Image (cartoon, rainbow, N blue to C red; front, top):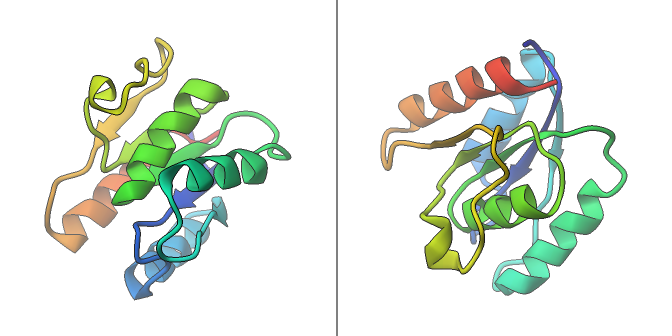
Length: 131
């Protein structure tokens, strides 16, 4: 599809060098990137509310990239607002007490290890689904 809006949802420890590099690679590929970070120790419900507020002004459906607990925030967002897709550290929605994302929303789980493989998977997914 090309370039579009990508929302990065960081892991519990927040933005680190790897996430900053991923954001730079996505921007270099032509994507608009929004990072929704929360203070370390912020609870899951607060993270979800913060992310909903941050995404409220975005037109259309962004691609969500959820890393670590950001994957669970992404799964919450995919149920509560229009998104073009979700890639990241996702788990079975039933484990989170959430319904599955709406039919037609592509979801891809990242490999558990290997920074290069994880980065390549995110870049490929975003290139295919960002609008």
